[in-house]
Length: 509
Image 1 (spheres, rainbow, N blue to C red):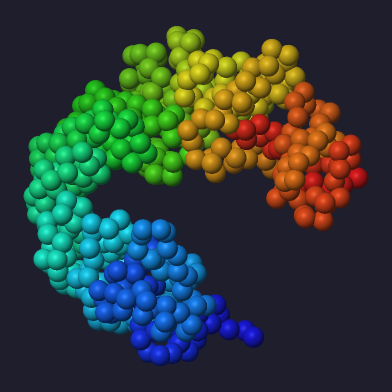
Image 2 (image 1 turned 180 degrees about the horizontal axis):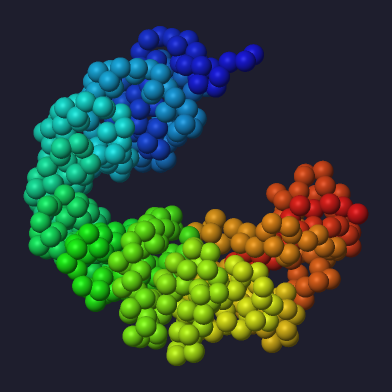
């Protein structure tokens, strides 16, 4: 009828009777938008309504909008049909900040965090970023935190979120944030997220500090906390991002200091390159790390002092893979492909087995589009050790080995694709198409024949390649998939991803 989905949901909410049913529904939505089920005991404390009352008086008016579940020996739980619907109801039912504030206060005062669902609700409600999205007046957030402290006590997670609020809000007190986080750390010494927050506050203090000496001191505090985290939980994208931010901030300080000698600039660039390079190997598709890499490239390319320092360092020691790679990138971005290639070639002549240099050289050759599959295979193969975490180098080696058709290379490619299917990386990263046969700009169409199929996927034989290609029903229309039987031929594009070959843009013959 031309109405928006949001208006339909609001009309549905407005039509509920009696009014108490409407109030029950919006309170359930207030919490369920945080993807938390609402305990019947909580509703009883907020409204004075038992589960029996709910079943007798409100089941019928709410049966289409509230779902009820109960496990044996457990409190009944209520949920809306979907968290996004709950969000719409919350936004439309509580239109003013004052309405939202009073609802939050009512719920917080009724929570009993000894119950798991109430504890989940509490954590979602007091999370600093959530509160700052809902309440523009920071005094309302402060008041909510005061009420939470009164009703819940100085619980470590609550202290951490108040500290995060101080860090995030305009003109917040980072000193207060540090005091709160140290108290939270004492109360929950095993909670690594509190160490994360502490490291970020020290980073922010460094960024706000005017004196270089203090900035360095605060960055050391942040790094010490991050190293402690690495010892307990290993590297994570979050930890590596903060380490990269600290290194990049230090490099900016060095470049902004007119008295910094070339050696100091060289060391700062080298350290930043090292941190980001190692992080990118661990998390090749992490957006925050890619943004830092882009910032580093722009910073150096826009600063003649940095380029001169790099060129001076490279002239004195062409063995350094970090300096050679960065200089090559600068020359490439300036359009000087030959100088970019010569720089990496000179470094490789000095250190032929260096993984980073071989990978950088292979990437340069691939981007120029002038090398054979065999040549790319050679340099990508020298960019990793079997079984290490250089996933990108392994993928590109396997991709060009398959295209080259070298028997030994094909066997290794099979092993690599099998291993990359199981590496601990996000699913979306694993199945992302990274290249096409013939190139991403103008991929070649090939003939393929379906070898076998299941209900949702199958495998196809492609004449140009020595291994089978995956095919999934989502990559073609449901009508085409229904018609496709083993032995049928079709044309398609071949994509390469960490899991192997995949047939795309399929057309039946």
